[in-house]
Image 1: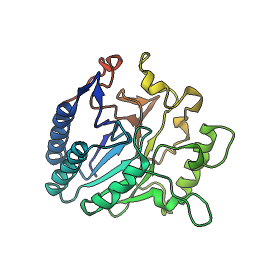
Image 2: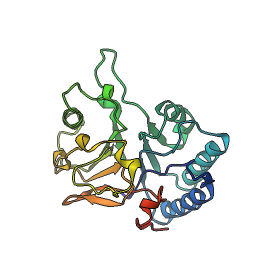
Image 3: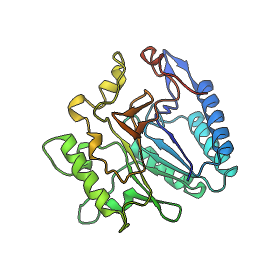
Image 4: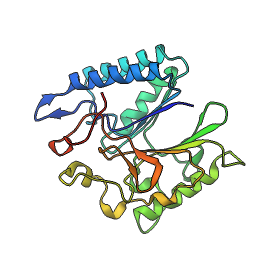
Length: 253
């Protein structure tokens, strides 16, 4: 299985009133070619697809055109999107009804069962015939199990989600896509946009992720990096620098 892990597109961002649509168009053109050249099976977008909650008609045309073109030329492509803190979860849920026919699926919220429990089954996505992906969007206080601290609640949620996997043999390939800040991750010192979203007291230890996980695709931090010693736990980083503080981040297109 071939995957491309992306995150933090921030479509619709303006930089000191400068519209960055042209830069984002170049990125989307490059990404579309990468999907085709490498015959990618799954494209992950790990949060912050948009920079603003209110989407203009022009912005909606931009993302819709990309998904239409990339799926039309790659029939086996599956696209999975989760919400970040910049995204409007309501807007993303609306996208589902428009994009589901293209095999593009969006997770904007953590759903609850009729009994009020977290619907873990909704967060488990089949990839092909035997692989699975655990998808968790940006978590607000009411989204994770009640606990004294964010990190503790997220850890309990992850464990319950992992145990829900319909796989008696957990050694089979599966992937985790999550929007959070991991301990030992790198934050650019002057990047206030990252710091104010999830404070350091709410960092999540990457040691919690089970060794059976083939790959953990994280979103939120704009600097491309692996987390601690874990080669398979990574932030994709933002495709475009969002601030002057991010100018040292290397981009590939």
